[in-house]
Length: 107
Image (cartoon, rainbow, N blue to C red; front, side):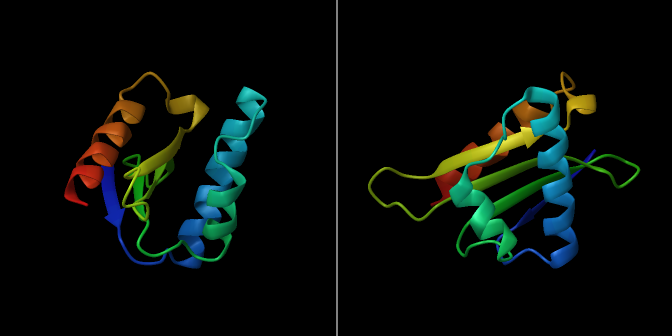
């Protein structure tokens, strides 16, 4: 598994892949994994200075995603994440949370 952290806006292909991932997670869980706020910003290419962490399988399949909102100076950073249902229980969620905490401490 390889991880890419992006501080800039996401490219269209990344957004489309994230939407596919969240759809798979939502279908499996019966509830959508990301808030409407995050989804609106994703469809626009991501929101600066949000940080996006993407977890890729060796075959270049997106298996996890975390959105870290770093804009609230009072409450601090907030994160939302999801892991593809077929790749759960492999430490991907834990790694995404670890990355989100690292980002939050950088702010």
